[in-house]
Image (cartoon, rainbow, N blue to C red; front, side, top):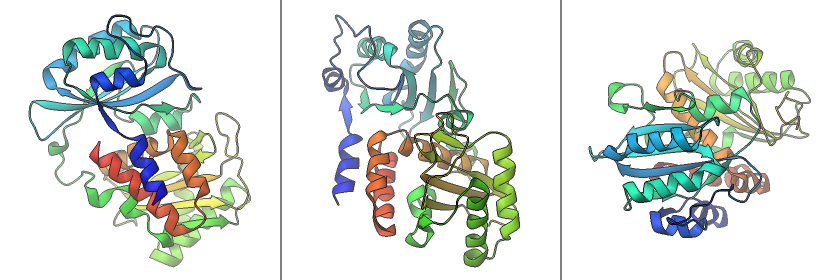
Length: 307
């Protein structure tokens, strides 16, 4: 229950004026330096009238010159409103929010989430698989009626207590993949060899470690009939060629059927939003049993859908 309350507290949605007060920003004199904190980038969600998205993008082009940034635009049920997912340098957030205050003072903004600095391909793939750095992309969920992530396809609904493995005996990355393969063979009748080979093939393209002790090995399986997820906490942290050099102590293994690309991307994006938050990572590592892990992910996923 305390974990759920903590998740709710960290993902509040603010009016624009409250958000500016929270960050110590002013329309008259927006912050020129970075926000406090260890990372260089933050992620915020903004709900805004669709007509204001392009002017905001132009402002980001100016304010983020020379720095990587992303803006994902998702249409909402209200045809005149969109949800923006912004990942911007902390040094630019003041100017972006001040510009937003000029354009759309009624905008709603989520609490900012720190994005880890580790420049891994795995992290960028999770955060913006379909987003161009330094540009804008539009998601149109209705264009793929058979390939969307519904509430039934959130990480929380995939992650049951029997898919949480705490204190797993795996001393290496290969041993971890074999353990996951053996589990899925016993539990779901999948080929253990096919599962471990799928994970190894993806890993050969680049480490799926994100840094901060987190890895998200994933892949598409012909044998899988529906998305599947496992949370694995090894008995001792595993070397994973992470960008920050830290061994991995939190593993989310994700599998989807072949040709279910949008569901894959939505789930990867949700995982990224969970793990880019330092507080979530801390709460997860405090969970001492499988039920507590599932409750934490359920609370976090509920806020992900709401905001």
